[in-house]
Length: 185
Image 1 (cartoon, rainbow, N blue to C red):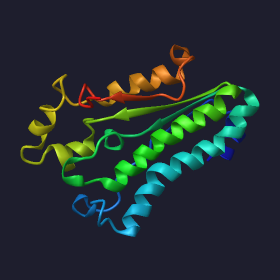
Image 2: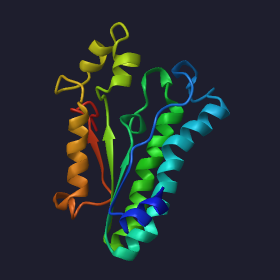
Image 3: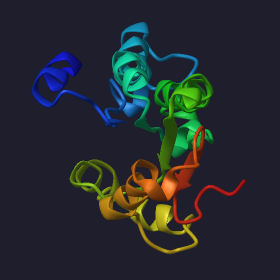
Image 4: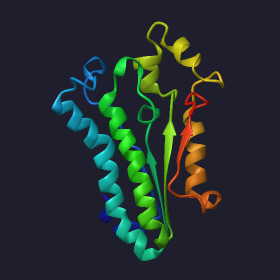
C-alpha cells in the first residue's frame, strides 16, 4: 500500500490509522474467557495494523522531514465497559494510545506529529443497526453524554482536520477524547 502510494504520488504526508472493531461476539468478549482466536484477531485489526502501517510510512516521512500520523482509539481503551465486555477491543485501543505517545517521541525530531482520536459513541450506520437500535440502549447511552447526543462522523473529522493541518502544528503525542463529555476523568 505504501509503496504504491509512493510510486504514484512521490511522497506520503498523512497517515490515518482508522481500522478497528471487535472480532467475535460481544457475549464472548469477557477478559477472563475471550478465545485466543478472537483476541488475536482483535489485536491484529486494531493495534498491529496501526503499528505496521505507521512503521511503513515512518522512513518516507523522516526522509521528507514532515508528516502527520493520526491513530484512532476508542473510549473502550480509557474505561472498562459495562459487565466487562469488549475486553480485547479495549486492550487493543489502550495499546494504540500508548503506541501513539511512544511514536510521537521518536518521530517528533523529524518534523512528524503523531496523535490519536479517541471517540466514544458515534452514530454510524453499523452501530445504529447493531447497537443503538436495541431496546433501551440509545436512551442508556444518551444519559451518559452531557451534550445529549451521539457524535456524528463530522464531529470526528473536525478533530482529524485539526491534527493534520497547520492548526495542530505544535501538537503531538496527544490522545483527544471526542465524546461529548461521556468520559469523565
